[in-house]
Image (cartoon, rainbow, N blue to C red; front, side, top):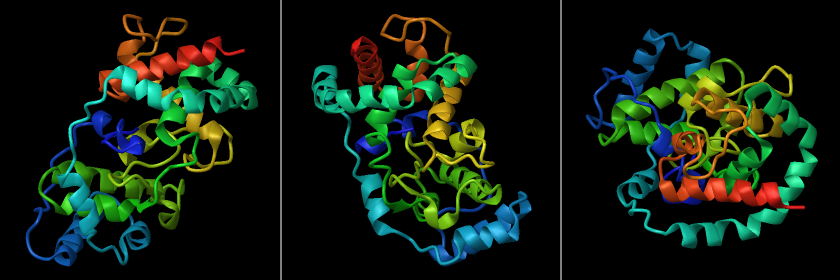
Amino acid sequence: MRRFLALAVIGSILTLPAAPALAVSCGTGSFESWLDDFKKEAAAKGISQPALQAGLTGITLDKDILARDHSQAVFSQSFEQFSGRMVPPRLTRGSNMLKQYGSVLSRIEQSYGVPGEVLVAIWGLETDYGVNTGKFATMRSLATLAYDCRRSDMFKAEMLDALRIIERGDLAPQDMRGAWAGELGQTQFMPSSYIKYAVDFDGNGRRDLLRSAPDVLASTANFLASSGWQRGKDWEPGGANFAVIQQWNKSDVYAKTIGYFATQLARAP
C-alpha cells in the first residue's frame, strides 16, 4: 500500500494503522546504541534471536531516507492530471493481465468478492504490475525512520512486524527490498498490513508478495474485503465500495483513479 509522493509509495503511508507506543527512546545516543536497545525490546516482545540476527545484523542509518522523509511535498495533482498520466499507459497491459490471470482472479473473487478489475488496477498503479517494487532495503529504511523522532513509535512497530515476516518464513531479509518508507511487494504493503492480510493463495507454504502474483492479488483482495468490500456493488465515487478503496489510499485523487482504471478495464474488449 502506497503511499508518499513517489508512485510506489503514495498509498500505503496513508493506510498505516495506529502503532502501539514502545519504550525505546528515539534519536538519543548513537544509532548503534539505539538499535541494540531495540533488539532487547524486540526479544522481550517474542522475536527470536535467529530472526533478530537475520534481520538486523549490519543495519546502518540511511541519511538519504531521512532526507526523503523530511522533504515530502503535498500531493497536488488533480484527478484529471493524475489519471491521465497513470491510466492510459497501463491499460493495455492491464487487460492482458486480466486475461493471463483470469482463472486466479475468478477464484479470488469467489473467495473475497473483489472483482479482478479492481485488483489489477491497484497492481498497475502501485508497481506497474510488479516491475517497480522499489530497491530500498526494508529493514534499513524502517530502522532509520524508527530512530528518527518524527514517527518513531509507528516505525518501531513496523520493524517488529517486518521481523515477524522473516520469522514465519515468508521472506528472507536479503529479499526484503521495496519503497523507501518500508512498503513491500507488488501492491506495496507495509509490514503490519503484510502480517494482517497476506495470504498464501498459491499454496506453497509462504505468503510471498514479492514473487507470487496469486498471493499478491489475493492478499490485496483480503485487505479490501476486511475493510468492508460489498460483493457485486459499485466502486466508483458514490458507490458502496468507493469508501473501501479510500481505505487503501485516503487520497481522493488516487482512490478515484483506482475506480476509473477498474472501470476502463471492465469495459475493455
